[in-house]
Image 1: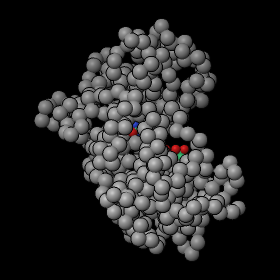
Image 2: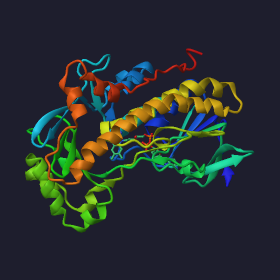
Image 3: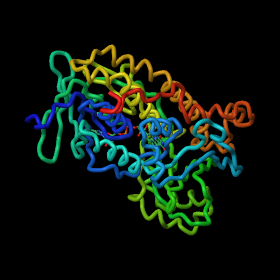
Image 4: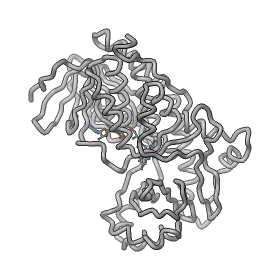
Amino acid sequence: MTAKPSASTPRCCVVGGGPAGMMLGLLLARAGVPLTVLEKHGDFLRDFRGDTVHPSTLAILDEIGLRETFDKLPQRRIDHLAGIVAGREQQIVDFRGLKPYDYLALVPQWDFLDMLADAGRELPAFDLRVRHQATGLIEEDGRIAGVRVKAPEGDYELRADLVVACDGRHSTLRESAGLKAREYGAPMDVLWFRMPRDESDPPDTFGIVDRGHMMVLLNRTDYWQVAFLVPKGSDAALRARSIDALRETVVQLAPFLADRKDAIEAWDKVKTLEVQVDRLPRWHAPGLLLIGDAAHAMSPIGGVGINMAIQDAVAAANALAGLLLNGGAIDESSLASIQRRREFPVKVVQRVQIAMQKRLISRVLEQSGEPPRVPALMRFLLGFRMVRHIPARLFGYGLRQEHVRTPAFPREL
Ligand SMILES: Cc1cc2nc3c(=O)[nH]c(=O)nc-3n(C[C@H](O)[C@H](O)[C@H](O)COP(=O)(O)OP(=O)(O)OC[C@H]3O[C@@H](n4cnc5c(N)ncnc54)[C@H](O)[C@@H]3O)c2cc1C
């Protein structure tokens, strides 16, 4: 194994080109920190990623001058989210009236990540290597000194003053560092498939909850991306049955899809996405920081995982850019300060997600026969004008909104 020759040794190696890694890479490179982002896939074209860009991320894009480019991406703007609960339409989240952004943008995540990658490629300090997979950490003198990389042109070692693991829920680096997350459990997994969309269909993304079943339809203009919730661990049993059983349930929940039910051709067109909620007690080790899902896997409830990952990236860039520019090893206390800043907002959102999983999703999926009900607290929050914005603000902006404090090299240095 050899060190891959490069124009300059990166000060920082970011592993994972998801929302956390791409935003961190862009912000640090923009501040002039030489860095490498490693992404194991060849592109960002994977449709199992969430699409939601919340107001907190819109604010970040404004702050780094990418808002205009973002607005040109294909997207749908949503100012409220509704659900059909036991046949009755219910308001779930209402962003109207929130300031300064009163909507959520639904953008295919591959377009969003491509935009960040394109912005990064314009910067001399940014080196994105796709099809380069980190396989483990290099440890020297009690600290992380880099990563081992598997690449099409051969395996190599990449050394850096700081490694940031943004490699998602099944983080290789987390395992390699021997860090163990606390598992909070999730009662569901998600079946993920497409259905064609007609002009006459309902216009918005919405959820449907009925006895024993829950489904979310994401409007991706010419098709519906369907997220169909199933009890955790039931995948094998479901797949042993005929695909007709799934088609029938989908039509029962959304009768307007009856004429297209055969679009769910076979089980191999249906992916199972595993849901997990966990959090590391310690998000760092000497020379290593973990952020995004690698530090805290988020439930899909509220569609906030992307935005939490981006908020982590902004906080990390704010804390680290100056230190990395100055050179020398990064003190672990600086890494601990990033965890201190981000842990509280993550904890609160995860607690709300876990409560929703227990009070709504578990009850619905247990098929108790009772018609499902929106939890009392949520009915209260949505029923009164004075408090209606609390869930929207929590999910839209989070509790400790981050702002970009890193300079844009070379103009502001
Ligand atoms: C079913 C489901 C639906 C969801 N829907 C939404 C939603 O609608 N909105 C939302 O905001 N959140 C949603 N989430 C959560 C969201 O997907 C995550 O919280 C978010 O993607 C985390 O971003 P990240 O950058 O930390 O990790 P990821 O998005 O997981 O990115 C990790 C990246 O690292 C790469 N990688 C992994 N290992 C390596 C390696 N060893 N070397 C190099 N590269 C590597 C991966 O290819 C990937 O590109 C959903 C989650 C689930 C399970």
